[in-house]
Structure formats: structure tokens, C-alpha cells
Amino acid sequence: MNFLIPTTAALTLAFVASSANAQSRQVVPKIAHLCVHTVATQPPAVIVTASGELPSGGFTDVQLERVMFVTPPQDGYQIYQLTSVPPAGPATTQITTVTATDSWINFEKEAPWLRGVRVLGVGDGVKEARVERRVRRNIRSLDEAEIETLRRGIDAMKSRPASDPTSWAFQANIHGTFTGSNPLFNQCQHGTDHFFSWHRLYLFHFEQILAEASGDPNLTLPYWDWTEDRALPIAFRQPADATNPLFDDSRFINQGALLPLSIVRDDLNDATAQTSFLGRFGFSSQLEGSPHGAIHVQIGGNMGSVPTAANDPIFWLHHCNIDRLWDHWLNLGGGRSNPTSLGFLDQQFPFAAADGTTVSERVGENLYSRQLGYSYDTTPAPAMPATAESPMMVAAVHPAMTHGHTPDANTDAGDADSTLPQGYQSIASTKQPPGINANAAAGSNLSAPLTLKPHRVEVPMTERARLPFNTVAPAAAEKEQLLIQVVGIEFDHSPAFTYAVYLNLPSDVNDVDRQSLYRLGTLDLFGVPKKVPEGATGTAHTHPLTRTFDATATISRLKNLGLWEDGKVEVVLLPVVSAPPPEKADEYQQSLEASAKKSQVRYREIRILAR
Image (cartoon, rainbow, N blue to C red; front, side, top):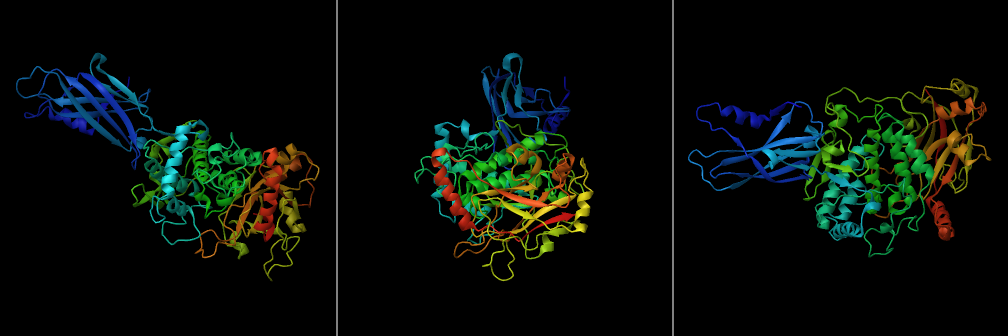
């Protein structure tokens, strides 16, 4: 049995009884009612209200006292006592009902083990209740009434003027916009260490605004688990008109097309296999590129471009799932943990709160879903380590697995060296990619637009360039020895497709070997189109993209199987598209071809980097 110690307030009450003038407190013997609920304050709080019966009147100073445990209770139940000061004179005989409330602020940090509350009385006078956190659920589990509440909230937000911080337009502009100069706009964190932490806070404040707008304070954002349901949720596709606030007619997959397995399965597995949060190929950057960015592009329309993505209602469900996958990754264990450096934890971001005011949020106080008072229905809220706020000089960054895709921070491709990772040098390059666009402006040095056909590029190799390849052993344990970069990617308009990237891929290989032996990752193409709307004031993401892949494991694997051809490095880009219903296949293909022609996806060079 755990030894119990009163909290500071209770200790004070216990000791004042020893003084000559103090009156001793008595425990209310019979607990009649108990109410426990959480509130989405910052930080979240649990409110406990207890009522009890006393055998006589005249009792004063009723308090609900929390009892502190030396070690967390095995059953996760916090003990309370309802106490009062007995009358100084003769007691009356009538039964008296007394009530008191305790507001436990920041309970998630102080007691992450908390599952319920137990108020002690005498005998059967004890009452207990579970602590129910706000639970975000899979969209597939919501009934029609709950879907309608979601529609009502979004519709109400869309009806508000764009200048209202709680309006749909204002909230979307916080993520990105082509117009507007409000300091809260264009804040989204892409290609930075705070991709996950910023979006978590963004979702939190949006959720509170949405709940208020819907008239249901218990509303929580649902998530779209595209690993199980690869088509857009039906409520977001039908009715396919303006009567449905969840519908966005700019999407490319409203007809029910299924997202590619290579994105929702293979790329997700690559990302969750990483045990480091940060780093060029850490979990955060891996998942941000694909599946996160690639799914944005596959959905297309508003979702396909950073400045317009949050205008599509599916954005919020997609990012809820990304947020859930962060919790899932932490729960996998194996050394997985969030950053602990003060530089990371002390970062602050401003947001528009539910009351329309601007609030500044510190990452360290909002890093875990527990700190924000919610969890996911199928994914337990990860435990908060006792050292979550411990100061450290640097974040713990370990080498990540070598197989996969990672988006570098978007950099200005006008300077080739600005895209070089620290400690690497370019050892081979296409210089001028095959099919230089004859109509391109002088000095642009861009490839011809990519199409929906395979794109093969052989990188010229000198004897000097071959040397680092020779050092990769068939069973190489060291990662990130050789990187392949696609540099200076740009497009006139956001495409509705992505590319899978392969190394030395034979033309006659089967699907299984293509994915398991030759694959490097996904070129997600989630960014900002070069041709922005007329009158656009600019955005923080207008520069070309550079995407980096660790080729070490793929080279090692091919060597081990005797499939590596010395001196040959051919990078192959295969279009990746969603799978429409058979009756919509022709229509979807036509829309893809139109997208490829309009988007004009180009790149400047493909190069090989070595340490």
C-alpha cells in the first residue's frame, strides 16, 4: 500500500490543529455525489466537485483536499478527502449537505498516470469516477449527428468575416496565404525542426474555435487514417456541392481514388523506423516529406500547395492523423523520444485563440498531447518523461536509417552550395539534365518538364566519383555515406502527382523487387507554385525545392545481391498516382495529363554527395 502524504494545503491544515486557537478539521463521512471533468485550458485542468452529508449543521470552511502520493498509485486513482470545520458550539441535529471543488491545473504534467479520482468517506460513502480526457476519434467511427456537428462548426466559421481571428479564412491564412500582411499569417513550419510541434498547437487552437462555433463544447477534431481508408472520407465527397461545408471541388480525388500504397505504407514505414526525432533523415523530416507532403499533393487542389492547403477541410483531419502518428511513434519505444534541448523547448509561436486574442505558446509546455489534455481513440497518449523540461546543451540526434526520403529545408537554389548538407561535397552531377528546355530563359539551366512517363537520368561518373561507391560494403552498417539530391525543383502550378525515386532500376523488374531493392523514396513536390495568383504578396515558401535521399543502404543491398554495376548511377523517377474507381479511370487520367501539362515540373540538377 502506498504511503499517503497530504498536499501543502492539507499539511497546513493538519498542523494548525496543534495550535491553541485552531479548530481541527473533520472528514465528511458520506460522499453523496462526485463529478469529474477536464477543461481545455492552457494548461488543461481537471475539475473535481464532491458533495457529502454531515450528521449535523453548523460546519464551515468545506474543502476538497488532494492527497499526494510518494509513488504513483498502481490503479492510477487520485485520492481526495472532503473536510470541514465542525461548529464551535452545540451541533444541530439536521443532516447538512456540503460541496467543494478542486481545480487541478497542469495535472497532465504533475500526474501523467492519472486515470480516475476517489473521494474517501466512511464505509459505502466512498465515491470514485474516471478522468475522461478529450478523445480524438477516427472519422469512420463518427455517426451522422457527429458529422453534422462538424459541418455546423465549419459552416459557422466560414460565415465569419475574414478579419475575424476565429473565422475559417483567418485560421487558414495562419498556415499560409498568397495575400494578407497580418503578422499571424504564413507561419507554417515546413522544413524546420518544429513541423510537428507547431502543427500540434495550430490544431489545438483551431479545435477550440471549431467547438465554440459548432455549439458543442465537447467536439474534438476527428482524424483520417489513410492507412486503413485510402479514399477520402465519404462525408468530404458527398454531397458534392456547396451545401456540404466539408466538400472542396478543387481536389483531384473527390471521385473516390485510393491513395498509393507506396506512400501510405512504404514511406510511413520508413519514417516510423527512425529512432531519432531530428536530423536530416530523422522521423520528423522523413514523415514531413512523405507520407505527409505526398498526400497533400495526391489530394491536389487547395491541399496541393502550402499557401492554400488549410482552406480544404480535409487538411485538419490529415494533420490530426499526422499528430496521432507522432504519438504512435513515441509509443514504439526503442529509444524514441522528443527533443530536450532548451533551444527547441523555448521556441515560442503566436496563435489566434478561441476568444479572438493572440496568445504566445512555448513549445516545451505543449510538446505532448497529455499537456494539451487530449488523446486518440486507438493510440494511447505517450508518457511524459520526468526529464521533459530538463535543460540540455544540445538535442540528442542519432544517425537514422539510410533507406528513405527526407525533405531538406527549402533553400534558395540560386546558390548550389546553399543546398549542400554540412560535411558533404558534390562528387558527380548531371550539370545540365537531359532534355534541356530549348524555350527556357537563358541561364535557367532547367530540365524539360517532367511528364507522366518514367524519367531516367544517368549521372556522369569520373574515376574520382567512383571511389566513395567502392567504400560502401555489401553489408554496410554506416549510414548516410552517399546521398542523392534532386536540386532546384520548381513548378508553375501545383501538380496532382508525385514521383517515386529509384537507383539503377531495370526496366523489366517486378513490383516487389522494385520496391524492396531499388527504391530510394518519394519526391513529394509539396511547396509553392512559381506562378502565384495575381496580386499575391508573397509567402515564405516561394523558393525552389531540394530533396535529398540516402542511397547508402540501397547500394549496399544491390552489392550484396550481386546486382550492383560499378560505374553506373542512373536515377529513375516513376510517376505515382492514386487509383480511381474503374468507371472514373478515363476521367482521372485526363485530369492528370492536364495537371502535368499545366504544372510544368522541372529541376536544375541531380547530383551525388559524399562525405
